[in-house]
Length: 501
Image (cartoon, rainbow, N blue to C red; front, side, top):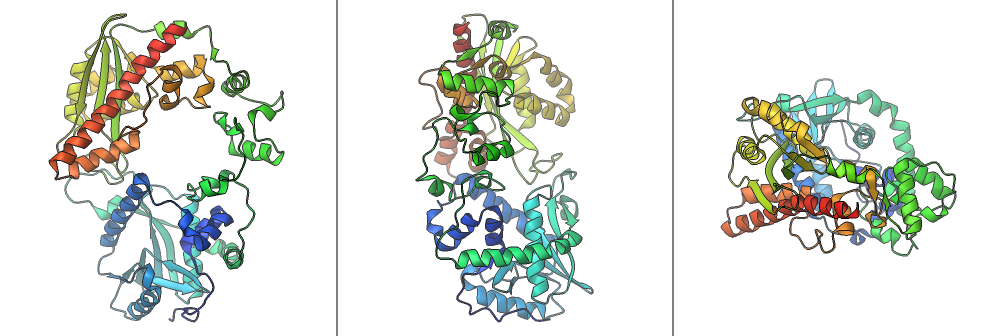
């Protein structure tokens, strides 16, 4: 078996599987990635966390296939990586290669895991997901094309995914159960003609001196957020009220409207079919006036005192950190609760934040039950709190009855807002971060160190991992401030809505 090394000296821009995926998403993204990568901003904290997660899961996956050899040469030394791959594949005593570099027709891949069997090699693409997304299938088909073209005999090709059915018992992970292999050999084979066509197309694009003419659209965010989006939009005159402000307007309908030259809500035909909520957004946007239903006051007053304004924060980790958990089970680590005992009464505040290593769920549940007592409406914003309480009840059988008794007391303020009120400054969103500043002057999430739920989860994990006391205290303070802002926001929002009735 020989790998195609004849194009190592090619001066044409080289494709890779990641560049292929970029071209599949948008040819313009591919062209910029090759010719002007400096236009892409550096990874933010969220993106870096995704990279770090993928790296950690990749290392665990390698341990599932023991006895392998890592091709260590990095992307700056591709020729050396190809030579090292060739040498290792020629040694029958090497059963597995990690990150081998294989080139065919100036298209490069680094296979996550390449496992040797008597009948050929298995291509194993490791993903930190629990399901085989379409983009993963395309990724694998490209690798199949490269390896087959390079003369590698392939037995199977598949995805190594996290197994949502795996329940972590504690201790070391059972790697055979933590992962599941989804074979996609036949699908890869069926796509080979298409891959060939796309390779030729993409090679022509990257060889071009000018970028392809591509209009922004759904591809800017699907399957990934394009790092060049802001550059593509920089000189475009954007509608003040774009049609994308209409909540849940299907991407196919957006594309159809744009094909007709309709970019703004103002340009929609009067009889264009919209849902009730979309119609409210349209009317409020055009008139500049808020919309309010006659049932707002009754919906807000359908509560039992005292009122508890509750917000949870949770970290969603790919690898289950505590016994009894599955991949991507959320770990609730914090809550904030503002309490109003009677109408027009003063506010009290209770909170919990897990600051020590170990499963926080039992302590959080005990504190929560003590705070919420046995009566009074629990005001939340969205169904997230109900889902969190249900998961706690499932995980903690000794407290399940009391936890489930909280569910009938929940009052979803988001549902009230969505059904009974809309302000033009919501800009098509019912997120509390959009709703709050429109109704409560001077209250927003700007300049907060932790300003969203994902950032809270990252900050909590960083706090637990840190050995710097000052950093731990800073992160704990930021987490408390953010969660407190969320529960206070619900109180202030309800008060503002009551004043409108």
